[in-house]
Image (cartoon, rainbow, N blue to C red; front, side, top):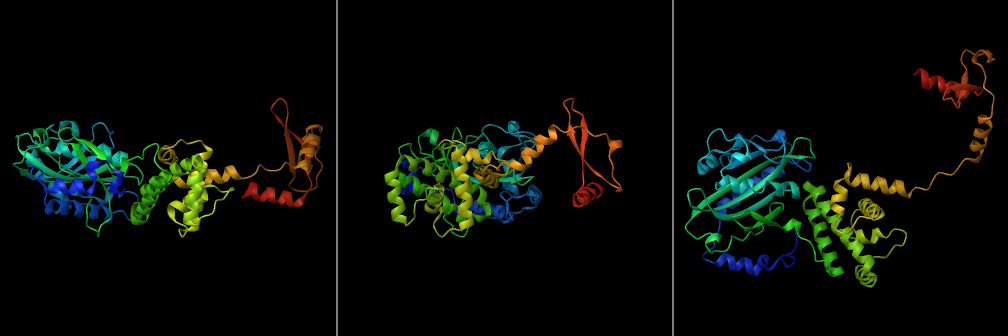
Length: 414
């Protein structure tokens, strides 16, 4: 996760602490936070080495800990109006939902459920669990403080076509953001026993607008050292989130690629960073020092080689700064596809076989041979044909090599 210094000022520790002490900001209790953490841990327990848990492993109604406070969104019919095959009893009661509500467009706009469903596109964009918290006035003009988490599920292991959400809430007598109070400040979960996930801060609770830490971008004129620091923090996330390594890895590689482009524009600063880290520049493999700086010189060498190849291929394809993530996600095989493409591009062109070329020229001028004129005492004969100008193959020679005939027999008769 990015450091606090990389966020806008309202996310700095001092601002968070001040917000926590502000009596107009109603904190959401530890019970709500624990439910969010338990939900995340449950989601992580289903990963089993995959990027997303299988929807086949989820039975919302059977999860007594979350069932009343959860909802399942189904995107198999499209993203515009996902279906809701499951809505927990507590959510139905709070939102006064009729029994026939089955899709998002039927959710009342000022209901608690609308606060949760407002964020589902963030899951699609971030491809990772998203937590959020804020307060708002519900359909009964009650001020509600809420905390929730949305978690992606997949039917094929790659596409996010289901989202499972868990939300908890409590009523408050404090004024909402629309009445003059600042919005609740979102802070990262501090329980070190769980893996981190992307947490959103609600910048305007009444409108449901969010700012995602994962979407943070460095300024265009950011110092090279700052770019390296950001890339290293993403690489550290790869080590900490092994269960979701592809999502974290692609972001780290994206930061590394942007750092590589910036390094080319600032060779003196780059040389200084290399010297400080004890990494040598490599003219024939310029991306290798880049990945060593970002992921560490002690990182698995085979992995570093793959990362360097992927970055090299992106540069070969003239991918612009900030475009690597979309570039790699567009590849059918992801990282492996980029590595294979770069290795193929580096292979030298095959040398021309002069003897074969001359033989082809002679056979182009050879006279056709009628099949009934072929003289051979063998049971099988291998005949070489040539396509004529009319597009018809005609026999031009009999292959006398017995080993080639045997190979042809095995190949055709197998």
